[in-house]
Image (tube, rainbow over all chains, first blue to last red; front, side):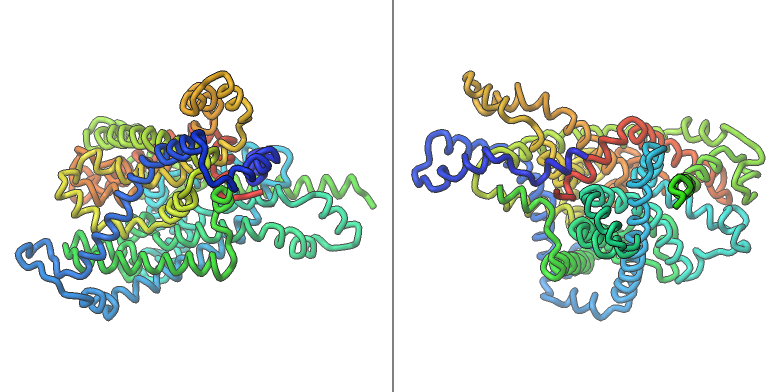
Length: 318
Length: 279
């Protein structure tokens, strides 16, 4: 995979070229023009990203401090942190947080293990490689909502093949079984993505090292634990970080499969329901900010705690 | 040791593993296809394959604006968002990959933050902003957030691709008197085209798949996209669940994905992994 080989390698000529320029205090005309061009080229992207994320988040912080119900537009009032108090003392928030945490932990853990197996199958296979990869890309690419309907009908009693196979059961009507179906749908959809990311990491593990260990009498399992895993740690951590944050915002599968009924609603479902059923912008914004804080905490844990290299930081150093 | 025997046994093992992977990937997809061809009576039969086949579900969804209009919206919004996102990401990624300027790591940090951003956090404030700006239930109301969320993906993927380009050519162009901008448009852009195609596919797939914004910022057929429209399908009467039409719609919106995957399998995989994995 040539892309991966190229990533991270800095052509020697560039390094030498950069050094004297940095020390020069007075920027040359060319360097100044380069700087202006750099900013000009980034400006449109930066403006759009700020307009769509930073500004609404700032606005949400402001809204979250107000009493603001769309049904009572005359009754807007600054109320400080009472919206946060209302959310954090509500059982709905904690139930949604629990459901989200269960789904995230189980689906990420299982799809990591299955993704690793998938990566090894894709890495080892010599014939039918294209077929396997193409097949694996379909769950990744398929519209989540379309796949979710498939799962829903498959588990509908007297209509679905899976329900029929399991004694005509109706798992979507009970809390934990429904969460199980949601996790199954998530795992099916996201394992290929992890598998492909890990496959790229796997192709970076030198074949010689494996052979040398084999000669020294290491078993396949020992080679996997002592050589493959440590060398793949960066790829695994990046895949984990992205999958965890992605799973944490789960919405589509739950919306279609259960609509959040029977205590299966995630944090995203809670935020959506609050806006469109309760029409409460103040509470909704407080939920938004609290979810945002959760995501920041998770990302911080991964990057500082586990030493996940934030993807792209090497680009910045150049 | 019978090496030949071991290898052939291994071959059988990996071959079986391949079959399992393909089967697990395809069974849920083919189930949707099967459902979409079932007659209303056959839908109430849990067998995997239809006992009676019909095109009726397809003709019913393709003859109503309830699905055709959202399909047009999905294609239009997806293409416009992809075009804008790739264009802007291209400019930024070129700057990131090639130019020296202060604030570069800030840009990358910002893109990373947005890639990890919980979309639900934007729904409440954006809903109110879009209402007051008149963007609610319009194409731009979805295009603007789609561009913003396509940008990080685009900047990462493109800057990875841009580092593969033989930059001596750019230098040569500059020696020949081209400005940096000309060097970008005339020399580098054509070389970067494959990376741009890959990025465009990934961004388009993300827009095509998007559901939360699509149901939150739309209220009528004027801008509702295909995935969002499926939640509003109704059966022939209040008592019929529109299972067949929904399955047919699901198959229709999956077709472009299958086409992309079949024709651009290598590119999609290269694009997916280039941004996240470092050598």
